[in-house]
Amino acid sequence: MKGKKLSLVSSLLITLAAVLVVLSLFFPWWQMVFFAPQYPEGLNIIVYPNKLEGEIDIVNGLNHYIGMENFSEENFPELAYLSYLVIGLAAITLITAILRRKALLYGLIGLFVIGGTLGVLDLMAALKKFGTNLSPTAPIKIDPFVPPIIGHNTVANFVTESILGYGSYFLIAAFILLLIPLWKDRKR
Image (tube, rainbow, N blue to C red; front, side, top):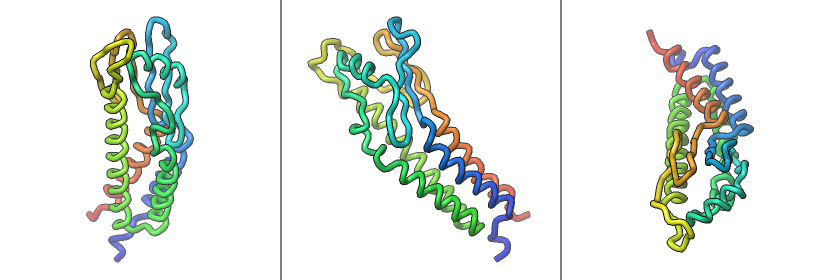
């Protein structure tokens, strides 16, 4: 039974992971910046786990010309419950740290992988929906497009940069902290 128990140091690393998961709620997870000659400073869409921020009204006004649906919190229902899922994940992470069981850690890592994968797939689907469902009656006709999750894209005279926010980096760091005990507490 002792071989299945995590060390105190591993428990502290998992506790730190729980703290990072909670901290991620207070920082943006993803951001898209739109640059154009008339907007050299850029226009932002900033995605938190529970809200959208940035110059969304201006972006929506511009996107109207190409027939794109408006960005709004109503179009992203996951923003209504994502914070609760993250708090639940932090609680499970803390319980894993307290109980110090390897089996729980394996399950927790699985939850992180599944949650992260579902999050990326959801964002990809949203980007595809917004970029490919353009109104045929729009004043400006452009080919459908799908902005990348990370990287840049050019549409007409706009260059967009998609980047991860600090919240995402906190989640990635938390995941890495969960992996360290697997190596640290392995059987020799």
